Image 1 (tube, one colour):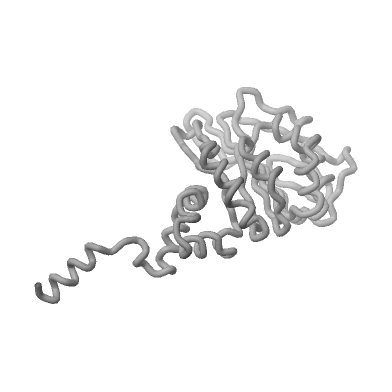
Image 2 (image 1 turned 45 degrees about the horizontal axis):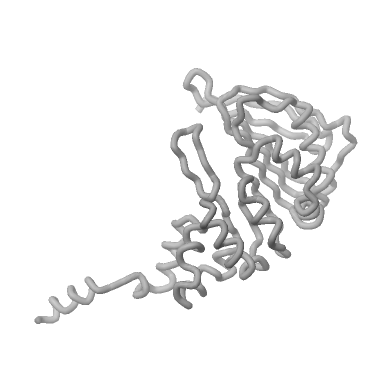
Amino acid sequence: MNELDMNISNNNNLNILDLPNEILLIIFNKLNKVDVLYSLVDITQRFDQLVLDSFYIRNLNMTSLTMKSFYDRIYSIDNQVLERIYKNILPRINHQINELFVEQYSMERVLHTINYPQLYSLTLTDFSEEVLFNYLTSNRIFRKLLIEQITCLKIDVKDEPTEPSPETLSIMFALILSLCKRLIKLSFCQLDNRLTFCILDLSLTNIKSSTLTQLLHIGIDVVSGVVVLVIVNIDVDKYLYYVVSISLI
């Protein structure tokens, strides 16, 4: 066998463990972190060092998107996968997590069983208005987290047959502003197939935030097959929420 044949033979025997750490991290960053944690933790010591490293794990997305159509989106994690992660993996990395993405069906196990001392950014994905309202009004652990730690909060409300009333949305905004003592950035998004124009006036609630600097409410609708982007601008001094532009995309 000549040298060329030997090189070809050696290349055919390469496996993922032969790749340098830099390449492995590039690959891992292209994958869903839930899948990476579930599949690679406790496989080899090298994999553990890479995927449990604070730089990789500090931004943890605990959702897994399955998109059957534009309006049929599922963010929840398989129960077996979730069980392994929150029981065996989250207790090992909880002190390293700065940003957390979570959907409503895994919220209780992800947030209620683990403490996140370094968490400052929270994204709630695909939450129903009812579930979100219940968390804001009666969930002690969630409320404590908002009061003491969260500076960046993003809420993605799921599409439902009945749209929330302006009064309900105003109450939720008021609750968020009253709870989040450290809040700097708030984003409230709704992706749906209804065109909704609501004015949310919190000026009567007497709720103010001395720390909030950026507030955004975005809705995306489809009207007669045309995507319409509705941007709501917020005057953080007066807390008056109103639609300022409609753009056709």
